[in-house]
Image (cartoon, helix red, strand yellow):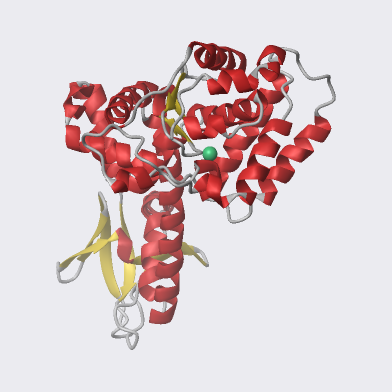
Length: 394
Ligand SMILES: [Zn+2]
């Protein structure tokens, strides 16, 4: 128990009062030695504790600007050290800001609040853009599988032995150690020139895209690009950004506590399907997928000329993007809205200027020093045969 005798000036009169001060946890207990009157003083109300000539001084915060603040003078050094260290602990950064905030003029408070709000928004955005990392990879696979089932109810899957062999070879060739999912590449029977990447490794090429390609390298470029979206979990990232943390928290709790079965809810899955299928990736996601595509193609010495030609042709030819569609869906449970989901290729939809990405791949092409691989020579020679093996869409 630390205590000391002290002289006190209460600020109201110049008269000195003799007091006894006792440190009691987070407050000072001040007793007037003459009258026995007791006062408790919170450490928060102290504005300074310092050496003053040959003694020590405690100054309290002024309650009223017209009344000088109360002062205590004492000589006990141990008491000074004790009260000083306690007060310093209390007087931490947060209290400093609270005190500071309460003393500044209103216009400064508004400015400080605005800056603090902006900082909070930025921090929230950073948290939101990184939140997907907390979602287990198995959720991508679970969601992808659910959406895959839904899509197969709406669309026919197109295939042929020759095309299946090419797709399988493409998958094996373009997969690398950076990939976290096993790819499932399917062809949707539709004249639309598009491709979709879903969480968990599901990639859909529309047969219109394949029929409009001039060589296998063009399709390899698109597959590599879609693999980039899958590898970087762009679908889940976009879900987190758009739907928000609350929903994702539910998912995490669902997976870790109750198991994923609670997401058997068909309506929820339908909504997520629509969202991911309609999804237009941000410019930065498209650029990231392009970079991964370039890396994958370069690793296997596949020329990026294919993807350059494909993008160049698409950006010139609007009819390829919005073809006259005949019914190519399963006749039951379809609607015009669902068809319109697929009219804009994901790699064109978010890009007012497609020139940048074509320039990016042209730069890559200049850097591709080594001779092109002969891996797909057979497919190059027989491309028309392979793509014509797919059923016609109209
Ligand atoms: Zn894309």
